[in-house]
Length: 537
Image 1: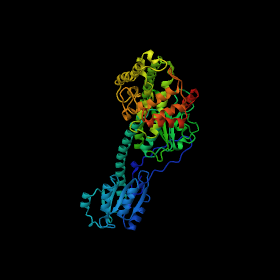
Image 2: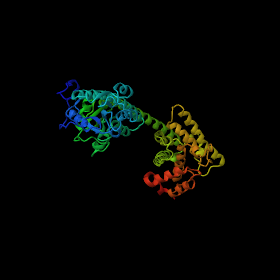
Image 3: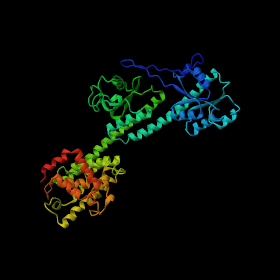
Image 4: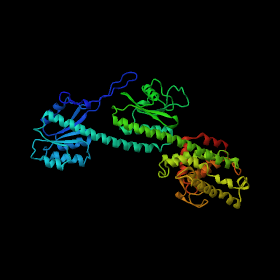
């Protein structure tokens, strides 16, 4: 509110009563309005500070920033944030220093929000009509006419104009951030990743980072659950907390979170803001955080809009999870059908799946093939690898199950499984738009017997013309086959298998993929692989 002795602005002073839960909190003071005085006369700075010392507008005091030249004013404006008003002298280090600064503010700093009021003691140096027409300023005053009352009126009018423009700009930026945030959230395909993304994006929308934020969900599996389940947390709110556990009842925000779940409404308190999010199928979430300032109406409205988008993202995640589970079940069923004819391979395809995913992750961490190891690739490659030998359903038992070496004619029959598997999976993938597990499985089925030097089958592809997924499975398939028993061979030792792969780097196998496999084995030492060495001889 403005100083009551000079101006009655009761309509501008709207105060909302704060709710309290538990111990009362000390309310945070709103940030002051920032006004810059640019003038080479020290008396002007002193008089302005004295005149505005006790003035408040909408509950916010006024902070004065001083500059004594146009150059210094430019430096401060380039560095300082949220300056609402510049009271600008015209004649300082040069006769037109103020006019130059006004133009630089708009054209170089691209600051079109700050209000600029020219104050001059020499109106002849800068005629008002020309200045108003040629420069993007908001008011023009001679120092002789700028009494305390006129200064007060000019400042309050300028602050009100700045607030209106700031409201429009915050709405625009907030909506831009929401659109960008929700676009990113829809790409996340796990509950924890989605929750972490929500925390990050709320901090970005409000521009306070990810400090002191917490996302929890109501545990639907237990009607009388003691507390909601922590999905993700960051900053101060994460102290002493573990994810995927129930929120402690003595947590500083537990009462506020419980109230949000009980009332199914977002609440905004002095100590914490809690956003209630309800998705379809009965899922309920809350996002709690401690903003460093009281949220204004614009920020609250933006958060409500964002909550609606988050709810839709959670719904999409559930649908995606259901679709993915159905897809995985279908792929496993197809593989089990193929394995009924070749029981000796046992868990081969499942080990291939795990090892394919592991090698893809090692390649991604090493920044190998960054254009190919996309999130979609990483999500699909393991599942797709399961179907690498699905074409063997068309291979006659006399060839598929024959112990010992195959004849040249039998080998040609066996090699047909690559093209058969690719054709079957390609027809199925054509029924689904975009990159999907079936399309990648077709690439793997048709390419995992190609050699890096071009001497493989069925097409004789070489180098990177062989799809990356197929190059990975080419290594994994041979590695696992050599490490385990087959109708035609005994298992090899791990050292012998790795030596075999190393010898064929750059000829049969992609050297980067072999190195990724070795790195995984050395750094992770997976029991499900290393234990097989005991079988070798």
